[in-house]
Length: 188
Image 1 (cartoon, helix red, strand yellow):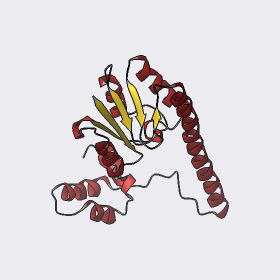
Image 2 (image 1 turned 120 degrees about the horizontal axis):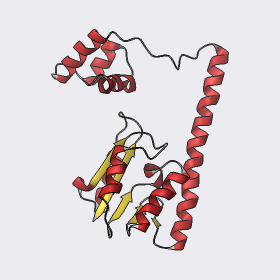
Image 3 (image 1 turned 135 degrees about the vertical axis):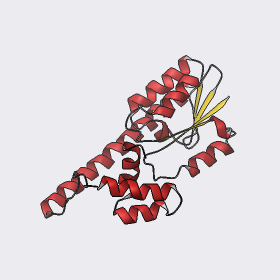
Image 4 (image 1 turned 60 degrees about the horizontal axis):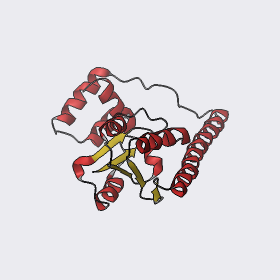
């Protein structure tokens, strides 16, 4: 059985490109596992479900290795687990076949590159924050005070279809990640 795995880092990101690639590779829509969470570690609900469900002879397919893991250790652990259970791993973008020694080597190289990319992104972010702090314009790290009653009322209007999510965010003066995070935190 072909099993697909899709991951985007935030609730706002669109998974359509990855999903389409998996469907074109022959994965059935109901065999695609989707996480909307950072790949910084393997603690992702749908990834765990996929790994638990996969059986000997199955093939796990992902659009690129960075979707399954962003650090070398996690990726190699996941692929080793799959291999030990007779499950093949395929990355469409990198065209990696883990059944060969060359494929395993290339997997390690690409995993290291994905890990490096993540570390460089975090380093650039830290540098940008430091510069913003020096200039006195850094506003991060502060939770925005939200009027919970107003938030609940506007979310109710959104859920009822009276307004769009974009309009709700505008009325609350919130960015999408904050809006959706509060909806989830407050179970609305």
